[in-house]
Length: 426
Image (cartoon, rainbow, N blue to C red; front, side, top):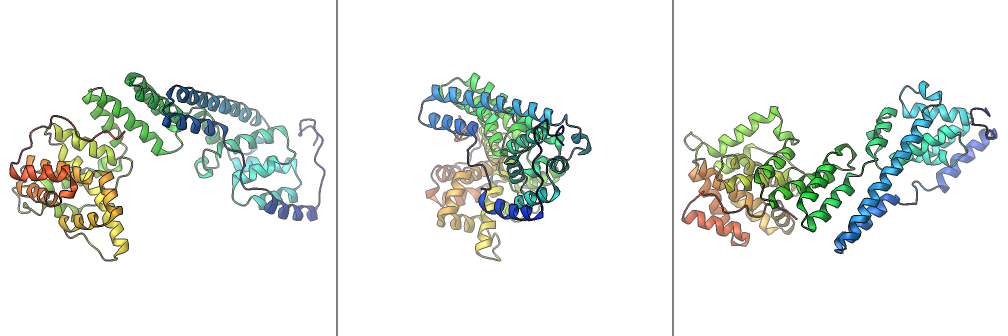
């Protein structure tokens, strides 16, 4: 045993009575998680506070320091993991984290003591690592658990898939800190350095596996699109938004028929289903859901509408349908059996409810409805466009969208706009 413990004294053997007592002691007295906050995260949050306070130079330095500290931490973790996997036991684990922990534990502890620790940890692998780390361990076991515990502060056990190769990959990916790189870009953009900001956003996006949440990754993608728009490079602006939509399930090849059907429903002015009820038929037939891509659909609808381009129709359709679908679902929860009966009725419900009204405004529904109606007119569905304009015009509380709708009813026009209104959310 002494050689396997790297020349340290073996832990004393203990019997079943001690093991039973250990279960109770561990379950009651030891906290479930480390009390200490992740120091890199703390530094990152300090950078955000400095940014919000307008102390951009200090924020820049703090974000850079956080990125450097993250890199050093996980480079050290890579070295520790490589050291632990040189232990002959790692071969017997056949790539399983659980198997290697069990092999290490069986070598370092009597079975009853190991089982007591496992029982106290329950199903939490991070808790298991913490409890073992409080014990006297062989160096290779301690190194392995230290890395596992560190990675589990950033990734879930399910994401690791009980895979040692995956654990190795995560230590490489987590050495990069795209969130800090993104915020460095925010500082540059705030200071008017668009080229530097763009380079930072692109750098952050090149680290896609390292983002902790998809929301952060899409924040960087939208920020990149903003730099193109602010620079007046509209072809690149369009390309960057289309890159976001490429990840939307609605853009998958198998959904092409759905997109085409939506387009026909809204633009077919000559067929037997043409008429003023085109939008209501559209909302009755189709339900789409978006989350992170919602803004891209809306901004591309505005972009294409600004040039009176036909692509505006389908982008505006999704930009309208997705948030209205979410509202309809919420109404149905409150009122089982509710079904959509028309845009006028739904609009009145939304405006009468503070939460729905706020969500619709934040989602750009009314603006997107205006783009959609304009696009329907462009695609020769005149009565369908007039029906949507009429609903918007009847609600002056909708502000500019209502005023624009009244103007269109008085003198319909789909000439290009001189600028893209309200596309950038900064």
